[in-house]
Length: 330
Image (cartoon, rainbow, N blue to C red; front, side, top):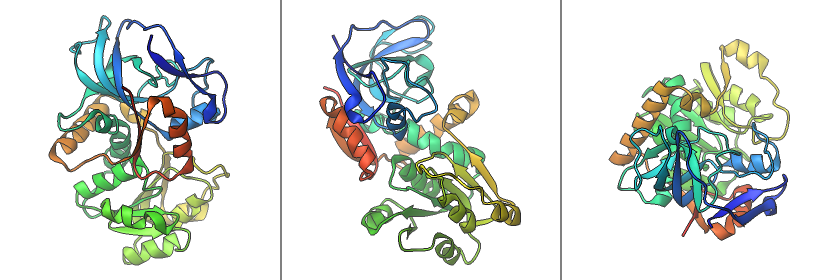
């Protein structure tokens, strides 16, 4: 029987249990994967803690991203065939279709092949991060070569993907990090400038970088009081994408900056993109083409074996990672 990760109550990483479960069969519109690698997301930590958009129904599975080999297909799955090498696009219920384990059932619409030049560890680290950044920056932000983009929490997998997408169109990527320890890494990863928020004023530094204009697009998963600093760093008629809520503090709306500059402050999630077939197709093509050409390349922070899934979650919560955390499955 395959080993599957489930949890029976919300809490710390040790609520995750590696359990032997009967092999599931794929139903209408579903495929089954022999999982080779699992990508970790902050959403899964929040789901485990009971702080996510979706509530767990116990016992619950979890996990959005897996790479593996299709080993069973249900009816109504189109051109997908047994033996296909695919990874998943987060576009389904995290509890119903959780992918943590040696085997996973997922909707057929949520799998896609990835370029042959990528390993399974790399292939699991692409769709969520690149399509999240693509949707905000390109689809909604209309990113142009002359734009300056401020990317916060930039050492995350999504932040690094955003840097690469900004650079791929020739625009300027300005990254933020709280301390000095990640500054050189972010510069090496392609950021044009890095603002260390523990000791530098974001708005003043941003205006210095842009000759007083500020950032045209701001891409932020933190929220909380930091939103006011972002508004101060924004250009006239800039757009702020709020795609997360890592801060547990209330998020005051920057009213006077918003009125004075004509700012757009917009909530955003990947599900906007994956629920629209045309945008999803454009996101997949942009990602696949970028990976094939080398313009986009996932950065892996660290790998853990499946038996250490608990340690992988603890590592994510430590905020030490530089890129994507991946769990490998033998």
